Amino acid sequence: MSNSEKSYKKLLQFQHTTSVLNSCASVLGWDRETYLPKSGISHRAEQLALLFGMSHERSTNQEIEEWLSDCETSDLFNDPHSESATNIREWRKEYDKSVKIPRNLVEEITHTISMGHKSWVEARKKSDYSIFLPWLTKIITLKRHYAELLVTDNKSIYDALLDDYEPGESAENISQVFSQLRDELLPIIDNIVNSPHQPNLGIIHKNYSTKKQREFGELAAKTIGFDFDAGRLDTVVHPFCSKLGPNDVRITTRWDTNNLVSAFFGIMHETGHAIYDQNLPLRQWGTPAGSSISLGIHESQSRLWENIIARNKPFWTYFYPKLQGIFSENLSNTSLESFLHAINLVKRSLVRVEADEITYTLHIILRFEIEQSLIVGDLDPKDLPEVWNKRFKELFNLDVPDDANGCLQDVHWSHGSFGYFPTYALGNLYSAQFYDYLKRQSPDIENEYTKGNFLPLLNWLRKNIHSKGMCYTAPELIKDVTGESLNHNYLIQSFKNKFYPLYSI
Ligand code: CO
Image 1 (cartoon, rainbow, N blue to C red):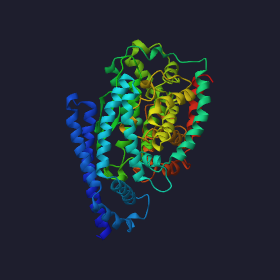
Image 2: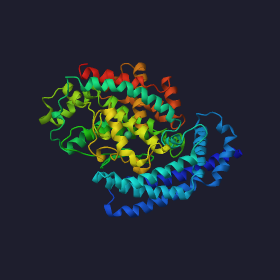
Image 3: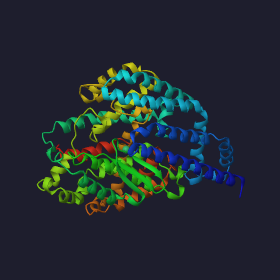
Image 4: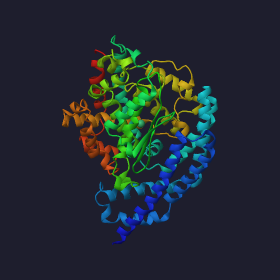
């Protein structure tokens, strides 16, 4: 065995142990959000801080530098999309980042965030921004400092933060795509909300037993490809999907007896995330070649299943009779067409997480603009509510009644997650572009959905996206798969194709 091969083997072993350690933290984190009793929270924080500290220490171990240097001059590093080159490249990136960040900064950020999060919860509850302001100011200062340590030559400090979520992207590119998107979305939204042909929402808001909702949600998740032998569904306040380890991917939802579909689409969304995680190459678990590419690509999978598949007619041609069978007392007199219209309501609203798939993007554009100004220092945190409300009015033509429904509604900034928001909209864009390409290759694929057969779609996603791990960056992958860089026209066109007929436009 050559020197470089020996070093690569050592790296694999070392990083595998770090990944197992991190997966222990994932179990504790999942438990904190699901079943941990309230009084157990402070010990849980101590457990997690210990594991994160150990993990950070491992990630700055000097031997990594030596092993990487051996590998980088060897054949293992030749083919950029190979398993070994991918691992070496990503481990190098991670190592170089880790050593630039002193441990005391990691600890200060962790501590400030847990306090800041607590103050955000209270501020939101009382709709009182002044409670959160000092903590937000401190979080921004720390994250700016963190970004300044990581920033490279031709990038902005916001790019350095974005890199934690969407490697390979830049604020400049996203700004360009978003501004075209915004200009084309606004008239589409106007057309839809001004159409006299509006859905009847009465059928959605009857009484629906959550036990039966669960039965149906699990049936749909299983049918589209979620493996319940390697995952489970639990109940939470804020739904998420968590990868705890190989063959253990868990989804969550929240139930509402007076809403037929909110839990259901939550399940479809999280199932989309889970299907990606369950189909990453198992043999490479714990290495970059066995990991997901970026949050934007992850979100493209959740939104593809939630919006492009589960909010459309072929899917419901198969599932609606089953849903009618389960809730016959409520749905027997409602046609498939009325149901489809009702699950595709478009309406300007205040809260991002309740937004429909079209206006959703505007919520993201607003946050993307504002968080850049906060990070570069153009916007003083004390002026946030005023700027938020003014920009919201310009984009949505709605007055924000209070900060709880305005700048305090989202958890992200209290977690220090600056650069996270744009990945949601990138997910929409990627999903539309992937799907448009797939449909041109397989024009009859949607006939299969009407028979409950989602395997051709799942297999396409496995082959083109899931199996590739991190061997491509997101911009490389979209180009490699569809032959084209990210293009907002696919999303715009998919909205017109779907919503204009529904609203008789
Ligand atoms: Co998601």
